[in-house]
Image (cartoon, rainbow, N blue to C red; front, side, top):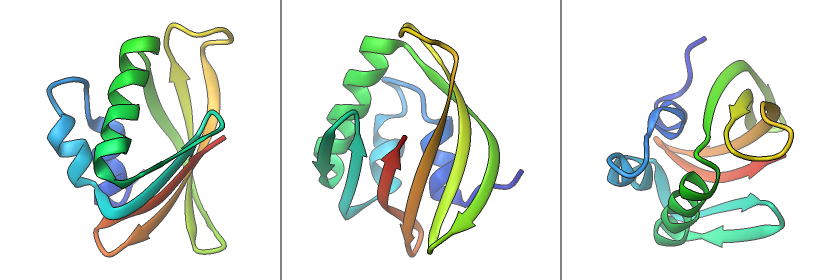
Length: 106
């Protein structure tokens, strides 16, 4: 499966060493929705990502890519220190140029 470059960067980034790579994958006005919260801009998104990596020590393996309603949907198996691990989650990406503009995780 070939993922668009910013999505590949999202899934391949490792905390904490790849923080700048992850932040650069997001547009300046990007928005992420996850676990009932909305984060805006690369700084908030980076902090959310680092906190989640520290809390759950998780990784996500992309399994399937589809497109719907202008979004790229990636089904991924997420493994980590959380109840129900591993879990298959859907990552809904919106792209703007070569950056992630929106991400919703379900």
